[in-house]
Image (cartoon, rainbow, N blue to C red; front, side, top):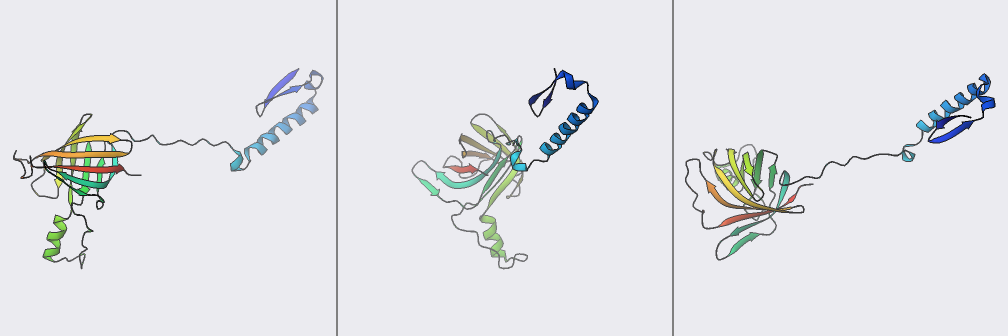
Length: 199
């Protein structure tokens, strides 16, 4: 017998018909028509393969602020529901933006022409810097190339971190200015940020 593969099924052709031109002509025509019909099947009947993006690993990615904790030897001051904040890490660079107050920032009355007191209040109500960083399994050291505070470029901040599922706890315990000096808060308290991976 002569046989062929037809839509994953084996089709047997008796030998007495295999050498008949008319039979083969009709058989091939029917075979091609069946292929055309199969290719035009509705989308919901076709098998689709979805490719899921790889799940983020480690600290790389975007993290949204959930709570902030200033930890001293005696007590801890907490903002349980933090104002919007975002920490972003790629393989070598970082950017951090967060709000150190527990209320919404006050909008300028005239966004393009704020008063001096509005500028001062706005400056105090946000923290940001960005640059490069190095890390190991439990700590991060950032080096700013741009910062809210002029002159902090080149300054370093030191963090310990822990990741559990989609939650990141990032604790800043040290800071060094570009000239090697330390801020007034050094040794008095640590700042712990609790964040969730942005979706």
